[in-house]
Image 1 (cartoon, rainbow over the protein chains, first blue to last red):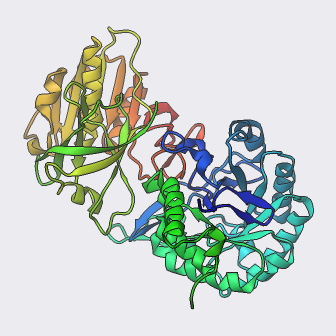
Image 2: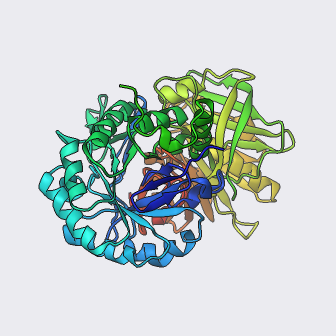
Length: 303
Length: 256
């Protein structure tokens, strides 16, 4: 038996496979296809202090080996989550983590305070990297000062595990990573989507209603892998790697680059059972290479 | 309804013309129950350009034969690739997805199923379903020309078929909303699927006469199960996912 358990900050995971926010709904959308309690952690979709309508349609553009989205954090707000969604997800036998976003520091703080009271939510993921909202979101994650300010403020009120999700749309991701580590983040997840754009040449119009959107899928994997590798060397807190992971082999690459856990995002859209296959595949890899534990391969890149 | 991921085998792929093809998929075991208006998310293998699944309406289900029919229009690289599938090839589908057309309680209501282009696809399944339950319905099918009128023989099994063509090569000349049946008959309910301008015109006609009207949207989608929130349409209740709250909407609910 190989040991798949990992500890990410204060968070215990039965295995290192998580689902990325915005790609797995609240988990229950997938329960016809897969035993969702097998997954190490489910990160539910981006939640804000107040309800957000999101951006107009079209919000999606398919790209070579990936997709652009411009959803814009459509959600019914944190109070709706607490009253209507939490009762349905709190008994899922795995970690349910809420991704928190906002357009002002105070929004993040108030949302985090409310979530801090929920017994069955062991962690939040602070989204300072959403490219699809006008103010806030990525604005916090692309400046040293913004990342510092929001992490510090949330850390003061949020007592449980705090993950900060970083944007790849920066000159030096390690600088932001060191900042959020210094302000008390328990772990870092990266990468959020890469800012991109699609054009319909026939119509001479942008494909997305917002013109630009966030690129995800296998197309971004090499960038994600590089950023995880750089960040893992720059900070002491654990790294959660994501970006274009489609199968167990991709996941292993992120572990070798230094990620302690991984998130599966866009792949869920193509194969709703992919998380289970990745858990099995990682276990198979460890057995085949005679490792006892997933921790044996974290950062084990021979470079 | 429980959703399934199934591998189905291509029994027949018929090229109807340069634009449309009919895929008849077979299953070795009993197909799950599906309802009119629902769709499948089809994985397109073997195309380097096609990353996401494609949402395709359920055109017809032959339960005794365990056959699922998909009527597809070639619109891009995904559907182009799908058109090359041959007998014996395996297609991976997630189904049944989405909501369904509302079946009226009163069997004596006068029903019109109006479709244009490939939008006629879900109307065959709806028509056959209504026919089996003892309803009588009329079909009003529109296309550019006679060659683009699809599956007419199939529709005739379940009701009276009226047609319009833009070039006048079959039925009445013009768009579906120009057909004389709309002036001569009083319908209780209209179900429609087709290009957006057509559905808008049908909805406007229906609303003008206070006729209950349902239409089926075909927004681009990623997941098909309400997780990604990419396929939304603006409604009186805010942005709703076409994949889970639709694809069928009451015309008065849409903001378009």
